[in-house]
Length: 123
Image (tube, rainbow, N blue to C red; front, side, top):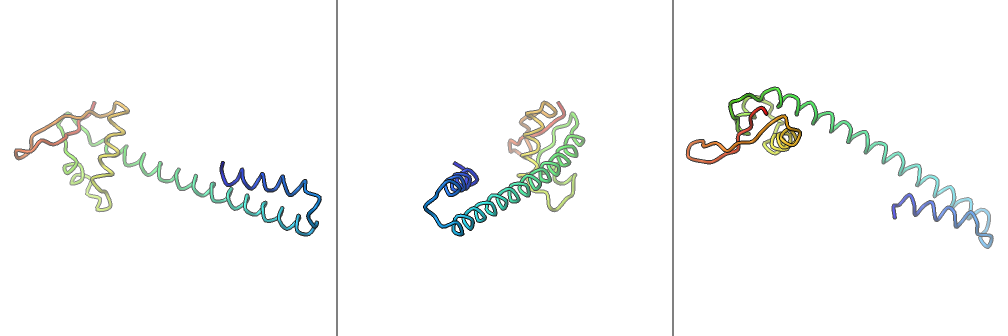
């Protein structure tokens, strides 16, 4: 049960209770309305932030997709090519995984200096 549902139940109960003083009932109902409005505002802001983050991720995903060629690139190669100091390996791996799932990129294992690494190529 969500907090909004709980406040709705409280409001319904107090709206139908006759044993409570009218001033107390009105105060409780006003409180419930304020809490529901606050939850609605909070949820709207969270949706806006999530949409902003998705748009930011979509932009980065588009940049990374445009960088892919038939030559495999490791995460470090991609980081060096982009040159953004705010970009982390985890962000690159997450976006590349999304591209692989979408069929826009493919993974392959490559050897670099005796180590096996994952390289990404255009699908």
